[in-house]
Amino acid sequence: MRRRALPFALIVLGLLTSGCAWSNRANRPVWNAFEAHLVPEEDTAFYASLPLTVPAGLLSILADTFVVHPAQVADDAWEDAGRPWRKLDWQHEYHTELALIPFRMLGSPLIFLGSFLGRSLFDMRPSADAPSPEAVEEEARALLERMAARDDGDEVLAALQRLDWPAWSPALEVAWEHALTRGAAATRQSLLALARWKQLPPWRADPWRGLRDPSAVVRHDALVSLDASVRPPPELVEALRNDPEEAVRDQARRLWPAPE
Image (cartoon, rainbow, N blue to C red; front, side):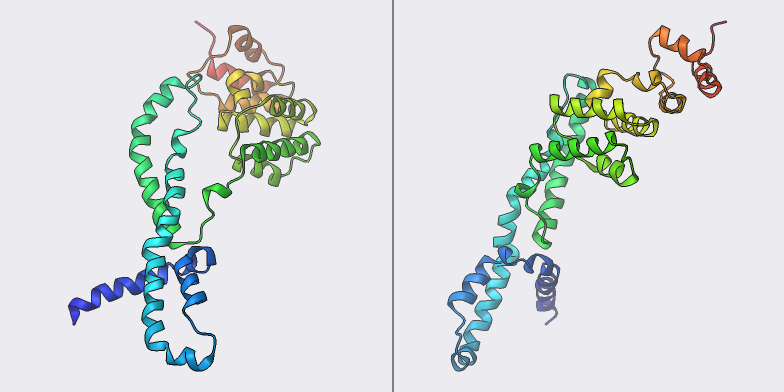
């Protein structure tokens, strides 16, 4: 009896944990076919056929839970596992990307396994339903326009931080420059910090932009965030060491003391 209890318990556990996936009708094609074609609608026939339909229904549930639905999500799990290999920036981050290859090789199978199990057990959105790059770009442009309009509230900044930034385009470049040009100091500070954190193309093209900002607050924030091992061009270092704002001047002199 005990030898039979373990397989039964595993089956029941699988059925319970797959309940979330089961709630979506698209995830149970075998059961849908069984329900549509083999379950009588008339009451007498329904009850009379229970000795046959109950085992067949259980088999349908097991087939959907352990075979059909997992097969449905395998391609989505494969898509998730391939995400670390997309958007490799060999042009600007060659050595970093090269160093990360072993970690990607180890991580991709784990991502596949985790995604496969999660999608098999829960009702997760298919990868095909993910927003297109064009839709993401449009969302980024709309958010940047709100920043340019000085609607730089926390919710807009949080949305920009969560955004899976698309490939940089001329239209996106225009929106970014527009937001930096028209935005208040707090807006520029947030956008420059975001570019540095996400390593967006504007930051890679000009990592010293925040150090040249007309606002002392932005310049000081860029200095505080700067890696001490990184040294801007000599003329910019000298300008910061003699900055009219005392906080900026002191921070620059701490980073780059005068040669003795």
